[in-house]
Image 1 (cartoon, rainbow, N blue to C red):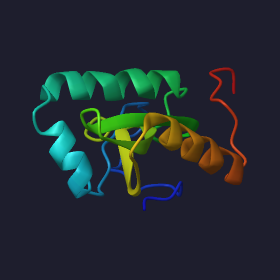
Image 2 (tube, rainbow, N blue to C red):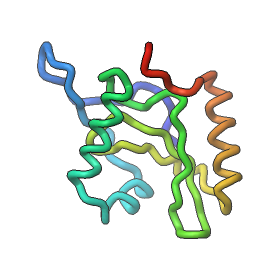
Image 3 (tube, one colour):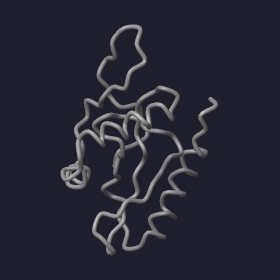
Length: 122
């Protein structure tokens, strides 16, 4: 499972607030789900998350999502991530057979980590 520790990111250019990219490769679940997606749109999503995260990259505290990984059968808990190549971190050990169970787990993670809903005013 990926934890909410600071990821190893590329060094941004000096004096610039730009979206970096993680040095950590995507896990197998992330690779399988993003492979068919348009690379430019994935990059654009990462840029939007970077902006929403006050121009900081990395996992966004309190921003958990439920992602369908097998249509109508399996759902996974993920965390939004301001990263151009990996905008969602999927927790490979948090897979459920209903979206409701995944949502409950996402809430438990958020509470356990003491995170609140992300706010742009920080």
